[in-house]
Image 1 (cartoon, rainbow, N blue to C red):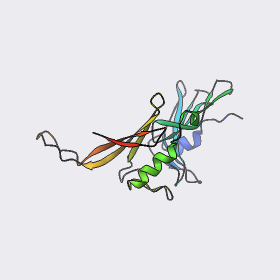
Image 2: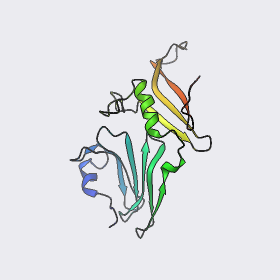
Image 3: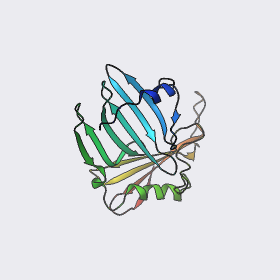
Length: 184
């Protein structure tokens, strides 16, 4: 049976204005549906997961695609792409990774005291924004790991607006060796 867009959950989110937490702890956010364009939603499984599930739906409510991410940009596990009749093409995303897996990147972030893998804390800051970003470059076999508020801002202030308190800290992690280099 083909997954359908859940109109009842959409209503419970005040038609996309609010988030909704399912009974199993999964957080539904960024949900929208248009009878001409179709729908979209983002699911975040309960802690300690660091995955995000992104889904798109056809105007008839049938699922169009399902992708699982670590961070917001690196696809993991199995992506599913459906035609309008519900036929699915699956893409195994984990084949692209070398010796170093996304779990190793999470361990690195834990070593930097950004997240806690065992209890799932640290994924978002107090304002609900991501604390890190992971981007995998398949061609170079490397991860770019950004800690959003990685270092205090000591840059000179130009008197135009309020300076940000923190600047990103960016690392490059070799996908074959695990060697980590801070980027300036």
